[in-house]
View 1: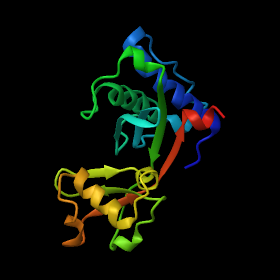
View 2 (view 1 turned 90 degrees about the vertical axis):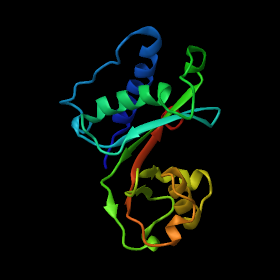
View 3 (view 1 turned 45 degrees about the vertical axis):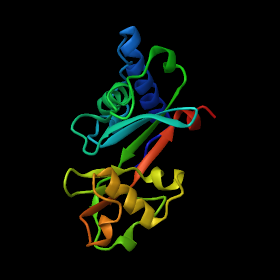
Length: 185
């Protein structure tokens, strides 16, 4: 995926303005989508919120059903108020959050767990209710392949060693990951 620095800035600003709209009622600035065709593509994406490097919310869509710009705006709001692991973001926390965006590639099924590349692949477990872990989860938590598979099983509601029983229906994907911290430098 080829996303420009300018497009990253637009999406990060839109995510922040979308969350801000919860407090000030202003809609995010909409860019000229003719100038930025990538923002019109229907791509899966996640928005992750942190405060002092601690997770504060993460919501996304594995499949893009609307233009990427709108997907990011929606995911940002949901990460702020609908992540079941956290209470809704308070206005007093708004200035403290840092935003990270992950734009997902297509998902590809694997035939062997050895095909999983830590630091490159995210995982989607296509069994039961499903479960997804973004590529950065493994590197941020220093997980090896086995630990990553166990974390995926837990996320999907299975016991951690479920993956050892048989080859599960797992799809891998990559992500274009960028954050406010990175673009502010």
